[in-house]
Length: 84
Image (cartoon, rainbow, N blue to C red; front, side):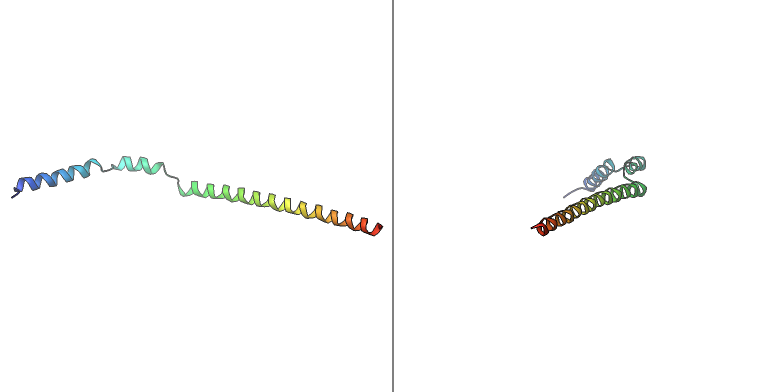
């Protein structure tokens, strides 16, 4: 049968194990300081939104240019067809 002292030693061992792995307030503050803040995330979101809108605008410009080229080709083809 286990003695009362053995149980206390086991409990103390568990408490010491937990204590050794605990984080102090200063360590926690340091670690939390390394995370992005809401303001950082807002800035990043705004930059990404601007970049996406810029890419989207560029794609629209290229599509519009392609439509204009095709319209010119249609006009040229129709002129050639009328000459025949």
